[in-house]
Structures are given as structure tokens and as C-alpha cells.
Length: 96
Image 1 (cartoon, rainbow, N blue to C red):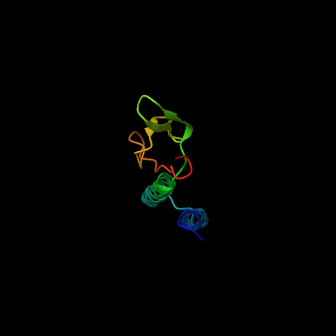
Image 2: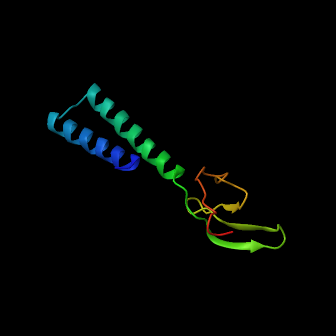
Image 3: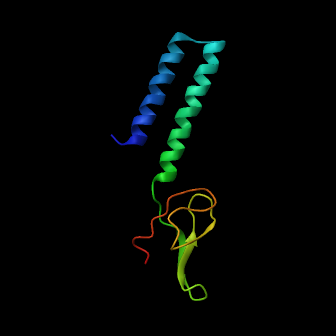
């Protein structure tokens, strides 16, 4: 089980427990905080998982490979390990 699967399992378990207990009021707010925290962790794991940029090509003007971030479509250069716009980790391994 990878980290993303573990977080999904935790989220599902919390949802099941809270639905059975039918929590309301202050506990309902706790439920929202836990749910949002788990979603935030999933988002961080997705952003740290490297993706290959799309629309890659060698740019003669810059003398480097360029492409677009698959997450936000921002232009990225081969020297960038992360997208400067959204923070998505980039994988240039098979493109160079």
C-alpha cells in the first residue's frame, strides 16, 4: 500500500465512523477539519508525484527542452524540478 492509498483508507474509515455515530454540532466541525486535512495530504502527495510535462519540444532560442505542466499548464523548462506556478514535481527523465 502506498501513501496515497493509505490516506484514502484513513479518509474512508473516518467517514464510516462518523456516519455511524451521526455526529453533529461541534463534532461535525471536527469532521470537516479532519476531512479537509486528509484531502490536503492527498493533494500534497499528488503534487510530489513526478509527472512528465506535456507538449515538450526543444526550444532553439533558449537551447533547452520546454513543455507544459500537466497540472496547471504553465510553461516549464528542463532545468526546473518543480513547476514554479503550482509546485507540481516534474519528471524530465525520458525527454532529454
